[in-house]
Amino acid sequence: MYSPDGTRTIHHIRESVIPISLQLITGLFLINGLYAVILAYLLLPEINVVQNEPVLSIAFLLACHAIAFILQVVVSLKLLLPWIGRNYYIAGNHLIRTQGVIVADEDVFDLHSLRSVHIHENWLGRLLNYGDIHILVAASGYRAEVIINAITNPREYERIFRKFLEGSDQPLVQDEIVIDSVPSKR
Image 1 (cartoon, rainbow, N blue to C red):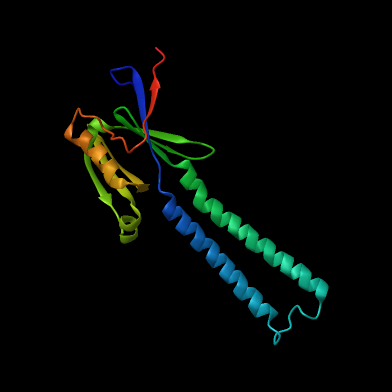
Image 2: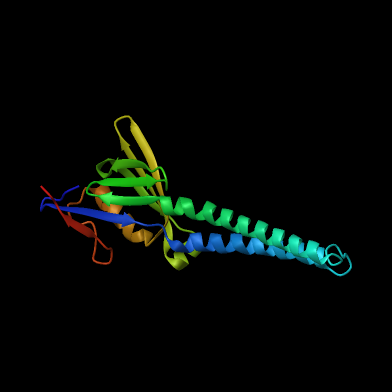
């Protein structure tokens, strides 16, 4: 999208790293906790499951470590791949949503058709400055609700989207948000 002066303006809206980090830490903590409980139960001196056979003990511990490692990798990928593959951009008068890592789907929403915008923040989001933005885009026969989850500085982006809602011709972005401006190649 090109502005009247011949530059293309793109604003990348990125999800906050805080919620994904908390989810990842919690998942890995639970896997390691379960792993420790299983090993403690099986290796208690009263039970003597693997202590009589040293070769069996080593094989058992290697198998337990391998299973724990595989679970940690699966949980990490399950949390990180959707986060990595979900991106939002404001390009000119459009909101662009891309989803997917290997195969990317792209949706383009005309911001002149914006009907409502509001923020949802929980107590932790307010404390750490992240939240969700809910946007309703509607045109003749078309209606879509776009939820941009867990973005940093949601109030600033709400202000940007409200300018589209109000039809303002003022600049959409203040200095505190990075703008990539690329000269057009006409």
